Image (tube, rainbow, N blue to C red; front, side, top):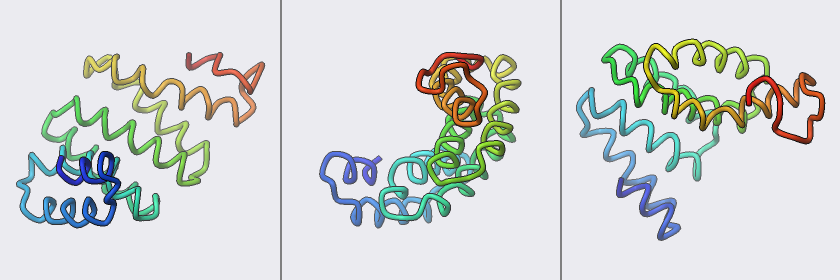
Length: 142
């Protein structure tokens, strides 16, 4: 929380990064899944390369699934998809990941989280040439 506050409100990305790393050292396992989402999704990408933030988010996704923290599992899935897209991963990889997550959404009752990811899903489909008008976020995902 404090690291994110330093980054977003006070624009102190170095301080946010410092407190974020300290936080990771003192967290227990359950809290780590949640804290990882905030730090690697919102704090560390401001100072570190996006590719370095993707794997910890993906790990937090899998750990959240294991402990049945479905809210943060879906948050981590959305963050991982966004970082993958912004970090230049293959569109087909991110699209396939989102397809797999889409199958779990109803089971986990996280439809509202999924709504936040749909514009990204449609943008990926548009860039892959799977839309009538690639300049508009309309189509199969929306």
